[in-house]
Length: 238
Image 1 (cartoon, one colour):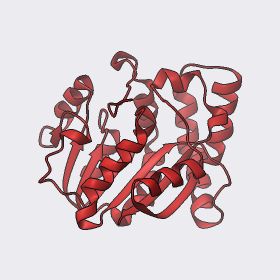
Image 2 (cartoon, helix red, strand yellow; image 1 turned 30 degrees about the vertical axis):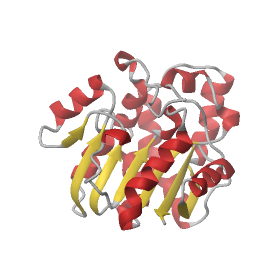
Image 3 (cartoon, rainbow, N blue to C red; image 1 turned 60 degrees about the vertical axis):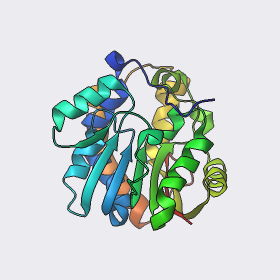
């Protein structure tokens, strides 16, 4: 088993395309982590920089360091954000002297076969400052589909599995919630049942502009869903 993530072909990075189209989705996700995006933030698996772009505009972050193992994606990151501190590699390549207050890992852990070892590496980096891990992963194994394999995913998580693995790595869980209820059923319909292998731009845009803002407001202010397309975790290194 390896800690190096399995990536899709960089010439077929439609997972990044979908996130680029989903501006409200990105903003809603980062709003969940907002109180902890302060000081020195390490973004693990920055990809081509959709989340990075939002982070660079966050006044609470005093120093942002992006980590990206794929040379093709790292090149795009450097081209888009020439002043960004960028480490081309994995968490193992981050200098020991760099001690983050927060590690942000969005849609990364599922790409790593040895995910428990990866979480332990996050804990090791955060332990000195009792820092926070902001973690976001795909959820629910029953909707794992061929498009997950196209993305290079090893798994989709349940709450029990993720809670257990975070505890084993030494984290104290603050919050663990499902995210995007409608997305769960959409994923099942499009990719599990109908076995699609791509996203439709107009569907992503429609969902992001008309459905997601109302759904996210309900999920965060009224009722957290019992299932969702993803899981969101906040955990402190003890």
